[in-house]
Length: 79
Image (tube, rainbow, N blue to C red; front, side):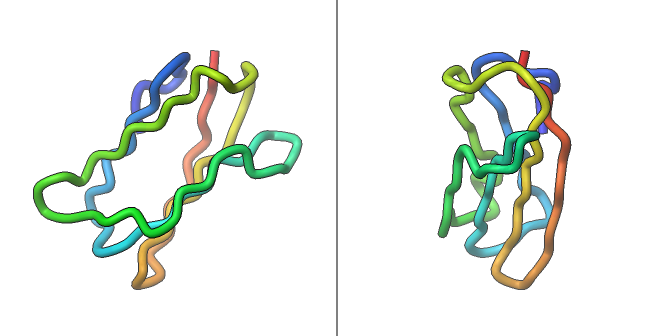
C-alpha cells in the first residue's frame, strides 16, 4: 500500500492475491467508508487505485481478502 500517509490517492499492490478480491476501508471509529467487492486480480494488473480525497484526515484500516481466504490488513494514514 502506497503512499502511506496519503492524501488523495491510495495504491494497493495486490501481489499474492488471486482471482476476485474484496476490500474494505474502515475508519478508526468503526464504520466501513469504502467497500469494493468482486475486483478481479490477474497477472497483468495487480494494482488497485482508490480515490481517498473525500475522506477525513486520520487513521484507517484497509482489509483485503481474496477468494481463497488470503487476508491482509494494513493501517492507513490519510493526511
